[in-house]
Amino acid sequence: MVFHDSETGGTGVSFVITVYNKSACLPAVIGALQRQEGSFDREFIFVDDGSTDDSAAVIEREAADLRNVSIVRQPNAGPSWAINAGLARARFPYVKGLDGDDLLTPRATSLLLDAVRTTGCPMAYGTCLPFPPGQDPLTVQHGALEGAPPAAVRVERPLERLMDGYLFGNASAWLASRALLLAAGGSDPKVFIQDVSIMLRMAARTPFATLDYPVFFWPREADGRLTGSELQILHDINRAFADFFAEHPEIPAVMRRRAAKRLTGRAWKWARRRCGAGMASADFWRYIRGLLAIGDPVALMEESCRSFVGAIRTPPKNRAAPILPAR
Image (tube, rainbow, N blue to C red):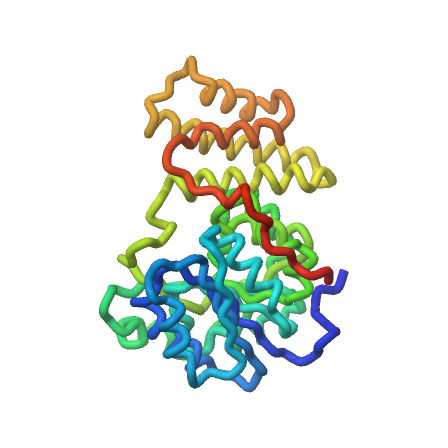
């Protein structure tokens, strides 16, 4: 199946920037967007996910010199709903995701577009580098951006790599064709954090291109980053896998069993380490069933989410999720 969007043609890019209480970060984020090199058309879709600070006002002020800017405001629902709300409004053939406190490197978008062209893959991702708060990452990490980047490489079976625990990075790392994202259904609206579910959905449909070059900087000590909650991250990884396999019964049984083994093992380690669970617990026996491939692997994946007990955020249950247009 072809996932390069032929409806609009060209190489225009829709930047989808998800924002929740990032007013302090946004001037630098928008400055990095303004510095994106390349001659492609572009639009900027900021999704304010119910911020309680002045993020929307900062966007309006700092993005005044950008063309084709829109701000989508929604009650707080989490990153998955936010990125889907942006995807629903994207008009150009390619979409560049961006978390609201990450800074794109100057050549990020043009290099990812080149990776798509040279490999024939509709999705490309790069690497990232941290930067200390209060410092200019272009100065701190200048050496890492010097020289010609290596050629992009095709990953023929990205879903298998995800089964083995390799994660391709968050939204700031990738650029993908709009057609692929719409065919994949965007992010799973039942999972709070978008990163794993959107990768799984794309990986089931196409090879990826990987670029061993930093395409964004992430703040090492930013307040409010979801990466600071190991509980939320691990729960949402298991939740994303469980939903994905429930939605894709055509995937070979060997992959389902492999995923169940990994997810039940992760859940057991968490329950033992953080909750004091012992070998008489449901967590341990669920792990044994996953290890020995006993029972329905999809049911085991679903059940493994119960091991993560605590302050876990979930998408709203009393509102309709954003609806993506048909491809």
